[in-house]
Image (cartoon, rainbow, N blue to C red; front, top):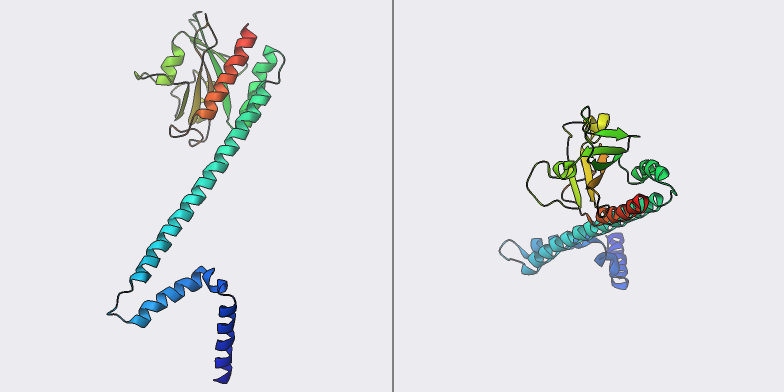
Length: 234
C-alpha cells in the first residue's frame, strides 16, 4: 500500500509540475472526460461533457479539412510546375520540324500517353478524311474540330475540354484509340485566315482528365502553344 501511495504521489507531483503532459495527450484527456460521467451517476447529465464531445467532433472535422486543403495546395503546385516545365520544353526548338517532334517530349512531361495536333484543311481526301503525319500531326476536314469537341451536341465550344472518353474510331489517335480513356482537348486559334485547330492530350488513365477538374493551367498552356504556332506559320 505504501509503494502504491508513493507512486500515486509521484504521478500527482509530475502532473502538477507539468500539466501539459495530460493536456497534450488526446487519449488521456478522453479517458478523463469519460470517467467524469461515471462518477456523477446515471441520474445526472453532464452538459460540459456533451459540449466537449461536440467540440472534439468539430476539431476532427477541421483537421480533416485542413489535411484536404494542404493536399489540394500541393497538388495544384505540382500541376503548375509540370505545366511550366512543359512550356519551357516546348519553347526550346529553333525550327518547325523540331517543334513538332518536341511535342512527344512535352507529352512525357505532362504525363500523358499521346499527343495529337489536329489541323483542319480545305483539301479533300477521298481515301482518308484524316491522315496522321509523323504520329503527331493530323489533317482534318473543315468543321471536324468543333464536331469532335462537342460530340454532336449543341453547346458553346470551350477553349479547354477535359473528359473521360473511349474513342469510337481512330480519326484522332489512330491505332492508339483503343486504349485511350481520358483526354484534354485544347481548341486553338492560329490567327486570321486560318481554320480552327486543336491540340489533344490522350491518356490511358480514365482519371487523368475529368470534367470536374480546373482548366486554368491548360488554358494558359493553350495560349502559349497558339503564340508559338503563329510564329512558325508567319
